[in-house]
Length: 118
Image (cartoon, rainbow, N blue to C red; front, top):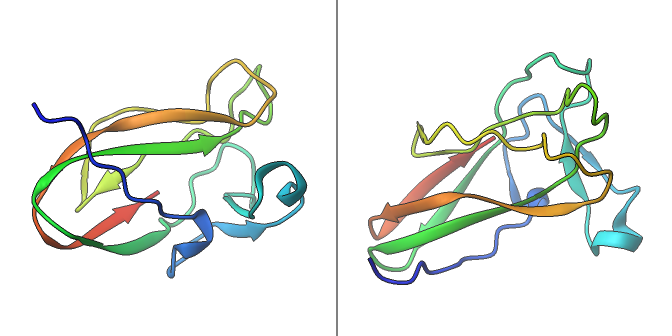
């Protein structure tokens, strides 16, 4: 397998927010805002979606910066789907009070439009 190619997508680039909300209270730590499913902890919300232009067919790695807000319960768990295909990797449940980077997975994508959802 080739080394995965990386494309930067900011959380605020998601043009369809679904049930997720933009929050900027940690810009001083992260450099930008983030999305939070904040209606009720532990209750799933509608998906956030973004369309991405894939420059060439290749392997792509998806990294996600997240935080487990309540370590004991992990109410903010979520998954990533690429073109409606998920790999089952659950994010947002690492035992840390800090913002961390997690690998969501590696995906082989064709050139053209791709939809990523939370």
